[in-house]
Length: 242
Image (cartoon, rainbow, N blue to C red; front, side, top):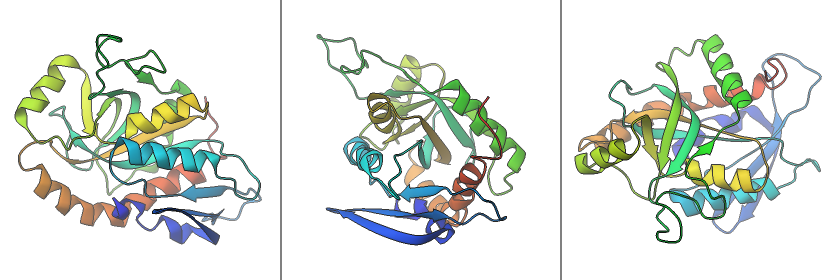
């Protein structure tokens, strides 16, 4: 959603805007809260809904140069519907693994296997998972809930039907949440050999009341989403990967 950009652009200086059709990429130098001799260049874009739009945006960001710098890492932030009942609105999921729940290339490949990767589950780098978990826990985010790490399912469908939820839980017993972009972004990053991390904040419970929950939550989320981005960017140098 456009709201998911929040106030992130307020942290950038000398912003350059790149227009790629209907996709806008904003690039600039990050303004650190405390003075530092480090320069971090950030390109940010609202990807749009769905796997195709997000894959396109990821590809554009990876190929974009700013200050003649190549992309070092790709972060994807956004919201998701909860599948696991323990998750509440505002909780954070750091995706340790992702699956495209609408991928079905049978009989050539087994169900859920992504043909170019020959994989069903896309695994995030443990170093980035540990790093993300550590900096978020230390940040003590008062505007968000608990922090979890686990499986997220991606598909070109807004899931709010009980039957769909039961089917997903039957196929993926450890599934935490569902959304429409993460696994496609991860696929592009893997194929382009770019480090990546997908992070989601729970907006609704993927049930018949999810549309209302989603719309109400967005008003709150757009005010606070930039705080998570800020924590990630400003800890690039402070907290090394382990």
